[in-house]
Image (cartoon, rainbow, N blue to C red; front, side, top):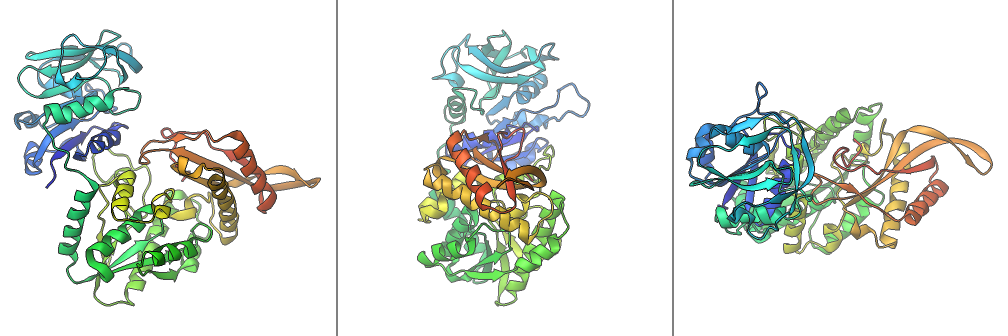
Length: 510
């Protein structure tokens, strides 16, 4: 068992970032609902707690609270923003509504030394995002940091390992935030660095073998990073009892089927390919609503695998490359989560299935899966691939999905990706793709008036897909891509570049 940090989620947009920062220190953590009882926390054997920020005012009716008995567990607690106010209120401090909202970068000063800020510079920039604030600290607490606005920025209990910070150490705008998180984990909570790719692989293989025994597992192979690394892990665990099935749903990138086949043949892992293009496209015909598309794809995805499973004997399981952000964004963890979008392998599963689902990566982030892949010697060509959504090009073909519109999108996407490879930009970008819009614009081509489709190109930097920033690709490259697409892809006469970060936008358009 790995040492565990539990993050109690009060609904902050940054909660997932806290988890990422803790994982970067090779410490295992999980996000749980804020109302988790002290008894449940004790049963999970958590070694420390983090109380996340949140959008609520502590004074609102129905504002989320914690089980007060968590403060009797005898484990270190770090309250972040709203979490600090929970801490202060519980111990009889005075929290007041903010007359002015403190939002953005601030410097902090330290009236006394404390292990939480060891190695953090005086005046270091932190990121504030709060309305309410602690006006008077509780008895038995000390102030260990103030903001440049003279507000209380951090407190500590005089005898218990209870800390609270009014800022967000997990965001990049807090310059030495990782140092603060590291100090809490190692100088205060006394964690060991026992969460590594190798330890994950050992644990996963043990669990897979115990769950599966001598039975067979179908694996949904898309050719992307997650399912491909999962195929290598499952092969390591149960050999040929893992049957990787590659379903061509008609929603794949150009030449995807051939590329996937050659990559796995080179690694001596046998895959089974099946073409269900007609089944998917017929079900999607006339459907333009994004969530409905995802639900249809999820259903047909499972139906396809169940049909394929009939060709084999003794198959009881379906392995999927579901990741932690998939689970989080589908609202499947905390009571305060909002479902951003359904994922085909999370929210699209039918209630009755003949196959039990195995999801070894459901608590991993994307970069952690890549690290696992490197230990398993997965080819670099696979590990370095940009993420590709489970529903495929259906969520990049806005509006109605048809074979004709998909061909336009595939051709344009290949031009964009090939150009990024040729210019050396592909490996500098976390994810890049094109989006076919459900609208047309007037153009002039060859002295003739045209009325054709608009195509968007998108490229983002990210660590795990939870937040992202658009990439400043040189204009000459964008111009080259635009020219190639308009001149060689029939049906497109205008190309636009998406300069929206996440938040407020999502990476995919649907």
